[in-house]
Amino acid sequence: MKQDWQDRFWVKVSVGAHDECWPWHAVLDRDGYGKFYLAGSRTVLAHRVAYERLLGPIPEGLVIDHLCRNRRCQNPLHMEPVTMAENKRRGESFSIKNAKKTHCPQGHPYDGINTYIHPSTGYRHCRECKRVRDRVGYIPLDAAGKAVK
Figure 1 (cartoon, rainbow, N blue to C red):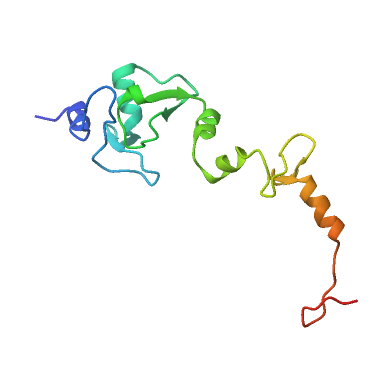
Figure 2: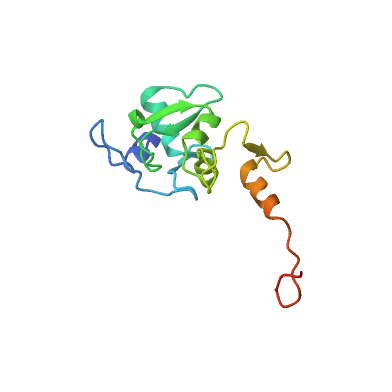
């Protein structure tokens, strides 16, 4: 008898209490999310299967955010459908950590007056730090690395 996909799915999950993470114990993708082979030679993200099976369809245009920050978790109560932009804002990537900074490394505020955003890169630059660098000015060096007078 052919095994039902739901039986194959749930045997790969350690289901616990409602407030606990339910870890995936099978193949993970390169980002650490569970992968599951569904019928029709289709591999899907396991947490999406768990969410849709237990809570219903994921609304169009939304992705699933793990509120517990555990990518292996299959507990749908630890998941929330959000926009991709919101999911990225909640993330922990280098660019998100930088975007959350309110001051430059020298302590000057990143605000509307003191912040320059480079048009092609989108990087933030501190205007006060640039003013300080400009005041010091360019000092030419000779071949030995000594200041030329």
